[in-house]
Image (cartoon, rainbow, N blue to C red):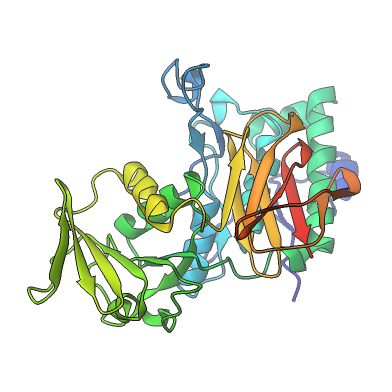
Length: 364
């Protein structure tokens, strides 16, 4: 069944109906909690001093720090749940950009989940007062929601498993998954109970860190030729290949196990290590000139790009694993645009322009 469009709009009145009709929500809720929804996410966007960050986070010399919670939908889906998110901004009186509600919706849907659209008080007040910026953000949300609903099949496909991470209930493995997403690793997520069969041509690196217990079937991936990454005690029978300051690399069958000496303390640096183990030539997806965008490569030749900062008015450089003959850029606000494709080793490169909030590159 299609995912429902869910709106939280307390104290509904007849005067509100034109706004509500524009969004065309399937369900309109009041203050009641939503069963099964996850409320622990961060409100998405670029961290700034007003949002509790450092003044130089988005300076010219540093990458902007992205707050993103779409990974929570992917984690929940991997654990067998619906992936419904319902977090709200922690300090509603502070106010957030009006278009960030659309961003929260987009990131959840891109990751196979859904989002309860809770309109924060400042946005709601501006809408009811006829504020032009608020009305433009509302119209954009309605357009994007309708477009994603019409094209739902683009967002329900599995993620390419090049970099696969095992997750379980709790903070540790979830935070590792979070940073794998934020660092552009485009990870596929599985639970300990659903670790797939080894296939080193497809699953190049299997991350089994942050777990209470590593499932034994994870090591079958190393035996078959993949790299398995753990932060728990290695087996004494494994042969040491290389000893580093913070980790030891062991040989196991046709592959290897990378064992960190301590539990992961810095998931951000750990995510970069895992991407390096995949190697840049074999990554599922990669972006340039888009420091506040997160890519996600999915089966069937799809590259999703979620832009967390201001719209990008120029071309960006994007690559996806696989060799394709053609590509089309799909966006809610614009008609399909054919893109030139270039072969780069085992990857296909394109230069999509004008990334507003969401873009999908469909390769054939």
